[in-house]
Structure formats: C-alpha cells, structure tokens
Length: 474
Image (cartoon, rainbow, N blue to C red; front, side, top):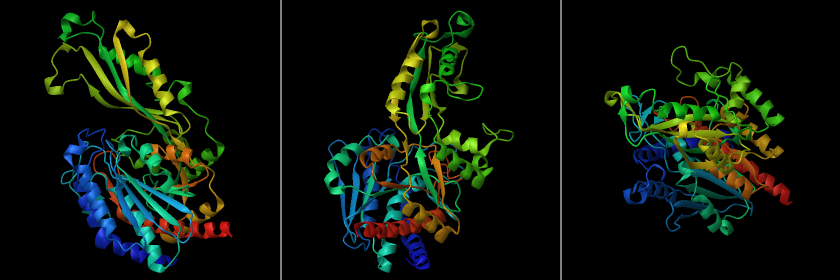
C-alpha cells in the first residue's frame, strides 16, 4: 500500500464529505435507550440510521451490500458486507447511540450544536463513536482505490452500546451464519493516550451500576425538632458507602472486586506511563491545587485500567440549594458507577454489591440497591506477531511513531461478548478519545487528524491481514 496515496485519499474524503456527515450526525439527539426510553417514538435513532446508511449506500465500495436489520422491539443495527479476495473475515464495529447532554458546555458549544475549531469537531457522539462507520469504509475504499486486496469485511454499527449493548447478543445470534468466524475484530470505540501515535487497547474494565436508596421517614420534618432523634439518611448512606470504598484513599475494600494483574500488563502500563508522563493526569481539568490519586505514572495507568473505582454520578432527594429549607429529609438516593477489573464478572459483582449494601442497615433504615447496568470487562488474547508488526508499521507510517499498548478504563460490553464468541480471533481495539476529548462530558470533540490517520492505520492492518491469510492458506 502506498502510504502517501492512502493519506491523500483519506484526507480528501474526510474534508470533502465525512466532516459534513459527522456535523449533521452531531445535530441528532439520538440518545441511547437507557436515557431515552421512548427513542422509537422520538425518531432520532431512525434519523441517525438514515443519515449513515444513505451516505454508505452511495460510496463506490466494490460488491458492498448494506442492510438495516430490525428485530422486533429492539434498536436497529446497520449490517454491511464487503466481499474480499479470500474467504477470511474481518469484523469492524462501532455504535451510533449517544450519551445524554450533560451540563457545563462552554459558551457557543453544545451537545447537539456542532462547531469546528481547527482540528476539533465539537459535539456529542462524533468521537464516541459516530466516526466509526465512516473510518471503516474510508479504510476499505483507500485500499480499493489502489487495487490493494483485503479480506471480506463485515461492518456492524449498533444502537444501544451506551446502554450496555443489551440488544446486540440477539443480533449476533440472528446473524451468526452470515457473519461467520472472523479472524480479526476491529473496534473503533476506545481511547488513545495522545494524538501522536496509534494506541491499541489491551483490556477494558467492566462496570456494575445501580441506585442506592436510604429512607428513614415517610415525609420530611423540621430539622430542629428531629435532629439528634431521627438519623440522617445522608449519614447512613455515607456509612454504607464506606463498606465499599475507603473514603480517604478511594481504594475499593472488598477483595472480590479486585483481580490479579498479569505481569505483561504491568510492563505495558510502565511503558505507556513513560510515553505519557504527566500527560496521564494533566489532560484532566483539575482545579488549582488538586492532584491525582497517585504520584507514580505507572500506578495511575494501573488504577484506571486494572483496579476498581467508584463514582457517584447522580443524586435524588436533595433539593436545589435555593430550595433547601431546614428540613430533615425523608430519604436520599445516589446512582453508583463501579468500574471493575477486566477479569471480574460484572453480573456477580452486581449481585454481591446488593448484598453488601443492603445487609444489616444502620438504625433499621430502609435500604435498597437496585442494580442497573452490569457488564464484564475484557482482556485481549496474546497479540499475534503479524498483528504486532502491522500495528507498529502502521503507526510509524501514519504518525512517524511506534504504536503503544495500554488498557482502558472504560467499558465496551460488546468486546467481552465477542471475546467469548470468537476465542481464536485477533483484536484491534483502538479509538480517538484522547486528551480533553471528554466523551460523556461537556465539550466532547473529535480530533480530526487523529481520525484520519486512524483510518489509514486500519487500511494498513486490513492489507496486512489479507497477506497473512493468504500465507496461512498456502
């Protein structure tokens, strides 16, 4: 493959067409079903599907077939099948559903108001991960434009990843014969440590989420009258959280929420830490004087990829400050997001978490934990030598720097599912979510040069995969 020719092709395709498509995609508030239960009636998901399929359908991809698969009562799935020069199969994955708006966007920016500022395209869902379909087809078209052979490619774009991919197993079962047994899976929904080289994800954390509710009264009462007699629901909630988390260090207490970290992953974490240095924490918008949880960069990598961590992502029963009177409130609820090590079972963790939090409630309060999203993490199989060489060659060709292997702290439920379904496959998990890109939060942006170079890297890996498949067949 001619790298310069590939870069020129991808650059022109993105600037002439793809950036406009993603701009229109950002405008569509197609929130994931977990955040928009009436998604079917609202029509935003359908608008996103129509936008993507209309664009994909007019691309000059040799032999491509495109279909929107619809199972009753489930979110739609875009299925694209591109024949190759051999019978081997590459599965390329992305999703089109989005996280909700989130507050705190800068002036002139907003989740559904796309704005391009230099290399950045701001707005919800462009980087997480509406670009995946466009990058996947750009890679295939770049090869076909040069006459470089590739294996059969199947592109899957799902619509409920941000809700835990609960519809995807049904589609995988329904399409199992059509998909076949891919020898390579490419997922473009992950992150990157910087925008200067190719980053390959070696593991993903799981998650156990839910709502913890503590009730002490049937209605609020005067705090002066009840204070000292009626226990505070907030204080009880703090006690319960201390069963789970050390409030001083942030360490998660139960041993069953921890996992042994393989030596290879420790070595990769140390290398990634040397590459990133202080960038591991300076990418976050700390207030003046705040500092990260550890001083050692390698330990920070492990804490965000192989150790459990807890965040309270929402609260109920707390009035706005302007409306907060002197009332001892009847109850307090919080939403918990517990990130799990890659090899901890998400379903079991959620069940154990419920038992931990509900047992022996202080002061006889009514305590309920309603489990929500639960997903197991994923650890990549050993990297084949051909893929390792291809990743480094691609990174040097398009970034002039070697590839870096590192775990990610987020969760992609699809990967654990695929790892179990295709145990002999190789995996390239990568993405464009780098410093300040802030997926799920305010001011999310897509780093356009990174997305373009990543398209080229995928093209290189597809070409090398075909060469490997041909050598194996011979």
